[in-house]
Length: 308
Image (cartoon, rainbow, N blue to C red):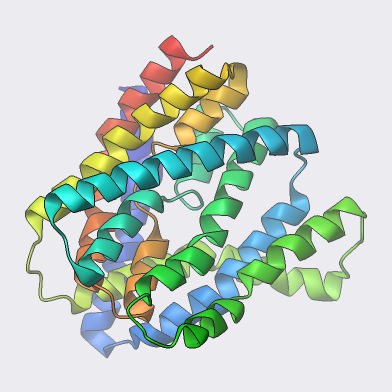
């Protein structure tokens, strides 16, 4: 019950308030969601990625284990999702929107505070989550953009769009700066910190603006399918992979917990930026965030019992 109330008070309610404010601002001022989307892709997301990777203390040995886990987990989840999409008979843009709502999960402004709550501010488990966040930022900015534009005949335009995404350059730069202990001048690092701190608020407001502009034709069965795959199948798959690899201790627990979080705001940003089922994407993010109060609590209890 303690985890339930803590997740509700410290994660879901604050997120919901920010989303509600975004919806209210849209109703009052008709905010331009395209502008908000571009701010997230080209400014806030790269800044938070640079700051977190630059400040991370994870070793290369642990980095390799986390990347191995993520590669197997992501591939397995992708294959399972493709099977569900085919059985469901989804077509065109809806296939991509459903896939993105399952394989892209909220590894930043939900998973990081959750990680620090469960592991009581442990620096090691935070570093594990930051690596997961790195991959969950890189893939939507590469494969995610490619997938939502896959219907375009001119693939050169798609690749040109991908190559304009700052995140794909920020990640290697951050590792190089950290690896060679290169100090970033305060005059540069201070504004990076300001921008990074605004990431969560802007992303949540963007989701709220999208929800405020929707006609609210609820896609109940599709949203339920997405939530089931993300919140139930996702963490169960994570459990299985951790046990198969023989991981244990805080590393194993942090990896399992990273799989339990709701659908990422990246799926909404991609849907809005490239006009690919934005209403479904918004409903999937919002509902999975609410339902995660219950599912994440059960994952935490299960993690404590079966992952040592």
